[in-house]
Image 1 (cartoon, rainbow, N blue to C red):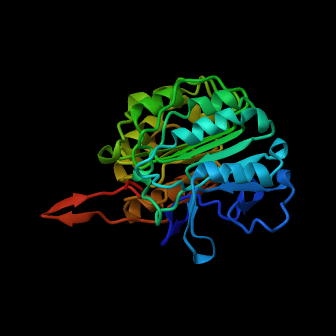
Image 2: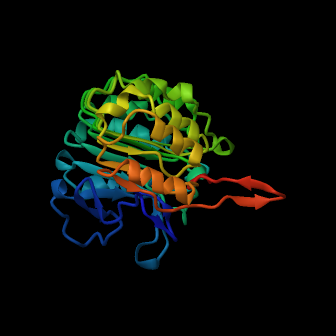
Length: 325
């Protein structure tokens, strides 16, 4: 589960650790001796506030500094943070640089593109690009994460090594979801999609999710997260009969507009007692439904934190996802 932070909102910040490694912020003093390149995760940012001081430089300069300070042949994890004007300038130059430098980064296994906090840019403002070339250039990549759905594109791929794929958006375009669903990912264990809302580009439909829920191209999947959706009840109903669920260990339908209707579908669908964890945090369930869910899954760790109340406006109830703008 992603804890809500008053300052950063819902986000995997990875400020201290990423991929099991301590994070090194590249804007640290250049006079410091470089760490062992293979034992840290390198955070590369084009703009940041180290020690409370604003520092602005192009991401190209930050990459140059990274290659000067690190031994790229041993680097296993990289976090790409904010870049100047990331709300108007796309990540295309970053993707191009990563692809060009792939021969120098043979050990890279974990990559986060766009680990940008809300105080720098709202999630819907982050301008992404086609990330397909990254997966094609790094066939040994095991973990790939992207934050920001504006301009995000992906083509169906076959990737033999990828184990974790996470996409954080306030609105996920259906074409990206269909590309994920149409990809052959035989090693993928963890799939997490923040679907968001239509207002911020979330056009994913239940039909787009169907190949994922069938799981035919995801034989190793053990965690599925279909989260942050205004269609959360419909997703729950689809999950209730989805073939992929029987082999999952953990399931996340959190951060969205889940009501008693969706929870009822889960309770009357296929058994979920084999799950180790069911994450439903940030929901609109009644107290009675929360009790029913808990009692129906006695051996499952069920997260029902963040019980929300709909906002009332002129007698109409409004439900909100956790992350949109």
